[in-house]
Image 1 (cartoon, rainbow, N blue to C red):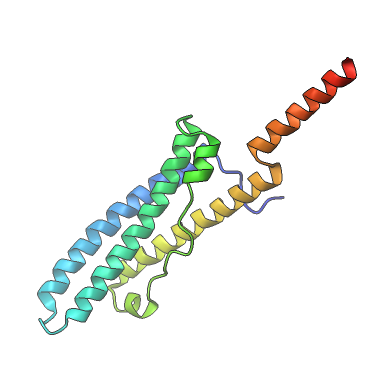
Image 2: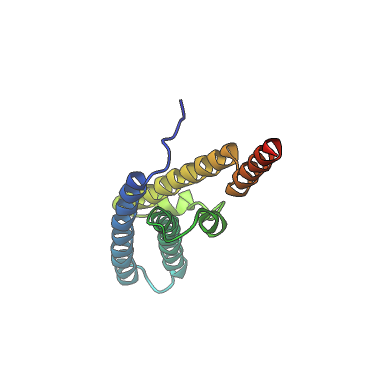
Length: 161
């Protein structure tokens, strides 16, 4: 029994809705945090402002990469991308940098939750990507399947002659 369900439009659509919601929450909350940080932190604490900005960028980018992956798969399921195009251009960025736990620990609790949610979403998409690519390798590529069909057709034609 596989550990992950086959990738299908329902899973992709559900994750897409989750990622859209998370992206909106992350953007809104980090914007408010930047405003609060600029108002509260003294001018000599530029490092704190930079840390908040970097974490905002890292978290937002992580969610955007998930959205891009999901949109590519939605396009494939809608027939707008071939499997070859999806495999070639629909990769999730590998080894996206994790958030700095020390910086995240200094953020308000609700922001920490958003950062952790973005990491969990990214990890889930990563597992789906790995399973999807492994399944394709196990099933053989489309080119290999075509070669196999051609070889059978030639063999059938040769034996019939």
